[in-house]
Image 1: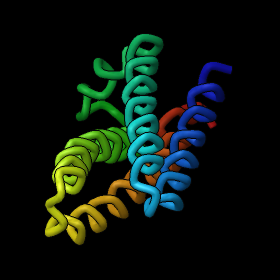
Image 2: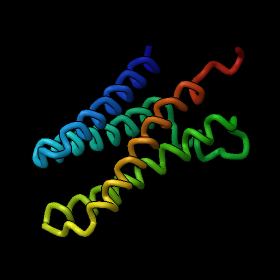
Image 3: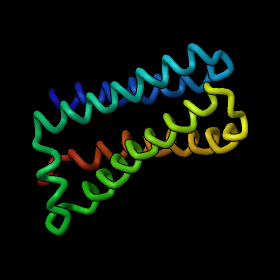
Length: 130
């Protein structure tokens, strides 16, 4: 049940990010939606850590299954990309339009990584005895 709740939240975050991209021309709404999505995602990571000791499990790279290691690598990359998105987004908001192409590429990459995080989460938490 706990896994379904977390994966449902993960799906909602992906859908929220897609909604944010759809309304990207409405700058205020885009910023609000994407901010909520990123904050919710970080909160979800904290939930997972508190309920599953995820950091301890993820730190055992040598003994973890490949699917878990791939999932963790993609998830960490996504959060790192959030930092770059925030940085380039703030530059855009301050009027520096020269970063727009970079922000756009980063945005699509971040969305792709977040979708991959969602997909790989199903393999990372799959029962081991199947």
